[in-house]
Amino acid sequence: MGKKLTDAQIEAFQRDGFVSPIDVFTEDEALRLRAELESAEAKWPEAFEGAARNNAHLNLTCLDEIVHNATLVDAVEDLIGPDILNYGTVLFIKEPLDPGFVSWHQDARYMGLEPHVGITAWVALSHSNEESGCMQMIPGSHGEIKEHDDTFGEQNILTRGQEVQNVDDSTAVSLTLRPGQMSIHSARVIHSSQPNRSNDRRIGFVIQPYMPPHVRQTIKRSAVQLIRGNDPFGNFDLVGRPQVDMAPEDLAARDQVNQSWADILYDGAKKRRNY
Image (tube, rainbow, N blue to C red; front, side, top):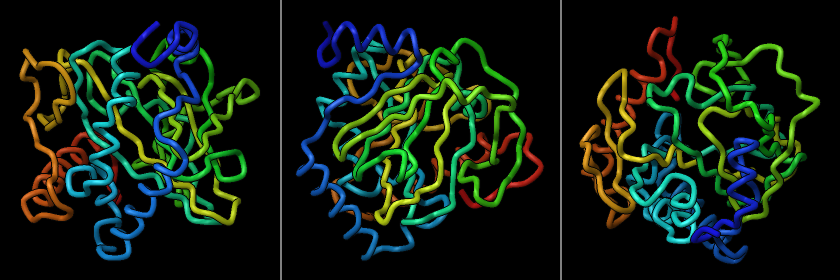
């Protein structure tokens, strides 16, 4: 038995490459976080455009709160140990009846992080189900990194529209989450999500990845937060936490991290998009 996860949940992650659902916040707490996020969105719309949805935890305190939530981090510790870095975050917001989708892919393919021991926490701030375009996982697909094709598809919301070909989606598992729950998946597992066919926004906040400090960036030095424990390796620069929303120094730190991310994620690509 771990700090948060049961033995069965830990075994499921090791076997399947993911575990879900995990209770983190009550639904009321999740609705409060959503309200704070959408209030910030109304006040600072530029902070939610294009690449600015990456690493918004560096400039918005409601997202920083999620990243450092003790219950969430306890679950992470159960899977990767007591020394924990956060490499970054992404807001995946699908508007009502939004045609945007995520193709079958593996996070580890383009992130430049080795070894591939990081894990992604996907936190739902709205209902995430098959109608709203929840994540789907291929159980046991985390054994090896597959070749990906860069499609740059117009409705594909991944940076390069990267896609693993010939995935047997008959084995796919849909990860249904209520607001306040999360899933955790391996950086190596094949996963995707479909368009939002519902009348509400599908708001997913992705912390990607939490990782132990011996992981290194093989393409370009970047920055992380130390979430828990110690970092004896120093493979990354360290960034702090926002004390208020949208402080100029925090925005500058976010933009610097996002520039490094773009250089890493588009390394070797034929073109770039603004996210």
